[in-house]
Image (cartoon, rainbow, N blue to C red; front, side):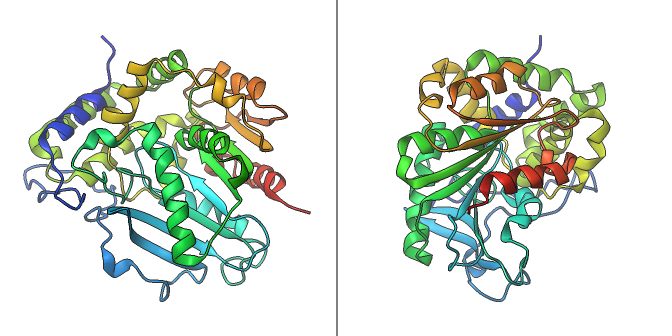
Length: 362
C-alpha cells in the first residue's frame, strides 16, 4: 500500500515533541547512536535567536534585516535585502513546502537586486519563513494552528510588522514557489490593492485530486534505498533528538526527485539549512485532504498581471498548470521542458529572463 513514509515521520514528531510557552520548539540533543549522512549541513538549532536580530554588520552589503522578529508573540524569521529608496514595488518571496526555510531562494533571486548587485541595489527583496517553516516557530502551543489559512494571515501580519519596523509599504510584487504560489494567488484576491504583479513558479495543485496525484508521483520516484532511509528516519528515538537535521535528511532523500532526472546532481548545489517536516506532512496537507479543497473560485478572481513558470518534470499533473492558465485572466505561461520544481537552478538563464520580464517596470 502506497503511503508516505514522511507522514509516519510527521506523526512521530508531532506526537512526541512539544512547544514551550513562547512558541519556540523544544529540541533535544542529538542521539549519539544515530549517524546522519555527513553531507547534510549541520545548521544547529532552529531558533536564530535575538542576537542575530540586527540591521548592520552582515557580510552581505545588501542585507537590511536578517534574523528572528517577534510578530504577535511568535518567532518569525525574516531576511530583507536591497534598498528602501527604490521606486519599484518590493518583491515578497513565498517559498515552497511548507517544509524548508527561505535560504534556498536568496542566491538564485539575487539578480533582482539590479545591475549594481548587492553593492548598489535598486530593488527591495523580502524573504520570510511562515509559521512552523524554516526558522519560524509554530507560534502557539496548539500546533493545529499551522494551516493554509493561517499562513495567509502570517503574510498580512509580517508585512504589517515590516511597515512598522522598516517603513516598508506596498503594493508588492509576489513571487510564489510551489505552495507559496497558491498563497500568492489567495493573498492577491484578499488584498488586491496590495499586489502589483505575481510570478508563479510551479504553483501548488489547485484541488484535491491533483494533490493526490502529485503526492503519488513523488512517492513513485523514490528508490528502494530511499524508502529504507525514510523508514529508518521514522524511528522517533533518533529523529526527535534533532528535528532540524532529521527534517533536512528527509528533504535530502525526497527533494532531489522533484528535479528532472538529468538534473538530480543540481539538488546538492542548493542551500537548505532549516526544515521541519511536521508543518506540511502532518498539519497542512492532511487538513487540505480532509477539506477536499478546490481553489478554482479563488484563482479565477486574480486581477494582478500574472506570469507562470511550469516545469515538465515536477510532480503535479499537467492539468494543474493548465487550470492556472485557464482560470487566471491574461496569465502568461512559460513551460520549462527540461526543468522540474527548481527552474532557477535547472534552467537559470531562462528563469532570470522570464522573471525580469515579468517584474520590470517602465
